[in-house]
Length: 180
Ligand code: FES
Image 1 (tube, rainbow, N blue to C red):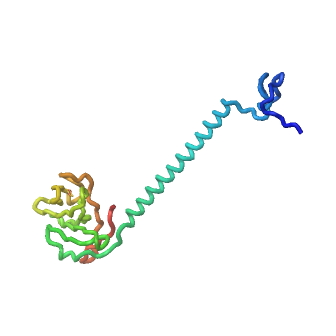
Image 2 (image 1 turned 90 degrees about the vertical axis):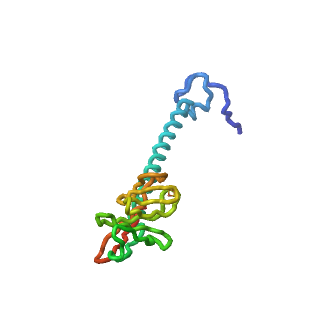
């Protein structure tokens, strides 16, 4: 039995498959040229890029949805304090959402209630309310926050305090969730 060599010398004329005179015999059975191979590789690469983009887009949407759900579900509703026990134009300290999470409830001069995590967004010291200056104050590095919005107003902090949704139900202030 003779074995057909793939390195057999060229045939004498152009093949039916379009080979050129002088091409080796294997070119008839495997007619891709290097240009064709490049084309296939580019096409495959483009498909890969499109598929990868789709995966990343789906991941981003999923992560955004998950983060939104987390935000919506962080912290459960719980009673905090009787309205009458909050000092006029003052603060009430409590724990929320867990027993190790310090939080601050502020009664603004106009009577509105605002609540935030008590952790400064700079390096995590606790913040206090200064009613005479109408500001939330972090003594560690003199950071200041707006007690209405929690936005930083001066000092090193550059992110707002996490707000806690509060609502008065009857005579009791309830915490409803935390905006993380
Ligand atoms: S920890 Fe609050 S300003 Fe630095």
